[in-house]
Amino acid sequence: MMQCGKLRDQRVGRRDHRGLVGHNNPVYRPRLGRSSNRGVASISLAIVLGFAMPQFAESAHLDVGELARFASTAAEQLGADSLWVGDRLLAPVNPTVGYAGKDTIPEQFRTSLDPIIALTVAATATTTAQLGTSVLVAPWYPPVQLARQLTSIDVISGGRLLPGFGIGWSPEEYQAAGATFRRRGAQLDELLDALVALWTANPVRHQGARWSVPESWVNLKPVQRPHPPVYLGAFTQAGLKRVGGRADGWMAGVQAPGGVNMDMLNWQRQTIDDAARAAGRDPSAIHTYVRVNVAKGTPVDKVADAVRVLADNGYPDAFVDLMYVATGTDAHLEWVERLLAR
Image 1 (cartoon, rainbow, N blue to C red):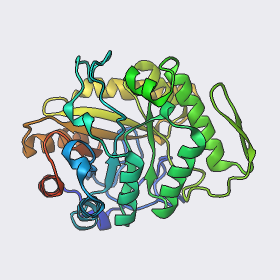
Image 2: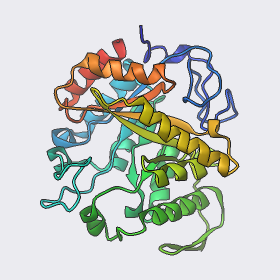
Image 3: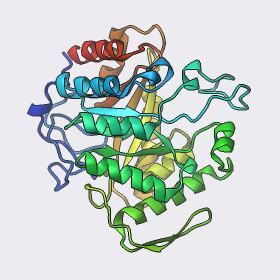
Image 4: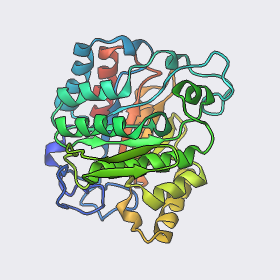
C-alpha cells in the first residue's frame, strides 16, 4: 500500500536539490525514497505528496485564518510534504490563446489570490512543509522586487522555499503586466540571471536587455545557500533544454485521470538529461516534481492511481492541484486526508 504524509519523521535518505544524500544543505529534511527518476539510489520507495493551496475560484475568498488552517492542517497534522501556489493574472473575455490547447480560459481563473501572499500565509502557518511556486510567470516581475519577496519567504520559513518559474501562454496577461510576449525565454533567462546575482552577490549589479540594477548593497540573502533551488516548468524542447542547462529542478505536469503518459514524461526527462550532459552538468542533480492536475468529477482513487503510477516509474515527488474538484477549506482538507490515507 502506498504510504506518505505521516511517515515524514521516519524518512531517511532525502536528497537535496543538488542530488546528494545527506548533503550539507540548510533545507535538508530526511525522508524515505528517491528524489527523482534519475536520482541517487533510494533506500526504499515512498511517495512524497504535496498539495496546491486553495487559491483560485471561490477558494480565493478565504480569509487568512481559513487559508492558514488549510496549510497547518494539511502539513502539520495530516503530513503533506509540500504546499504550492500558481500564478494567474487575469482571464481575458476574448482570449487569443486558450488554456491547455483549448479556445477558452477556465472560469476558475477569473478569481485568483496573489501567489506571494498565499505562500507567505503558508510559510507562517507551517514549520516543516516545503513551499513551492508552480509556476511564477517570470517576465511579469521586476527582478529586484521579486528577489526581495522570495528571499523574505525563504527567511521567514527557515529555508523552505522552492521557487518555480515559467513563461506563461497568455498574450493578454503579458499586455496587462506591461511585458512583451516576444522572446519570453530570453526574458526568463535574464530574470534568473538577475535573481541569482541578487541572491549571491553583495554588492550586486546587473545589466541586461530588459532590466538594469545599479551596483547596490543587498544584505538580505536567502537561508538556502548559495540560493533556493530554481525549478523551471517546461514541456517544449526549448524549455526542457533550458532545464537541463541551468535549472536545479523540473516542474512536470500530468492530468488525472488518464493523463499519466510515461512515454512522454520519460522523453521529456531524457531531453533534460541530454541537455545537462551537453552543458557539462550531472543529470542526477536535477530534481523532478510532478504536478497532478485533477479534472472535474475525478474520484479520489483515480488520483491515487496516478500518483502511484508516477512513483512506480521513478517519480515519487508529486503534488496535487484540487482546483476543479474542491472549494473551501473543509473540502480541500477532506481530499488531502483521503489521498494521504491511501
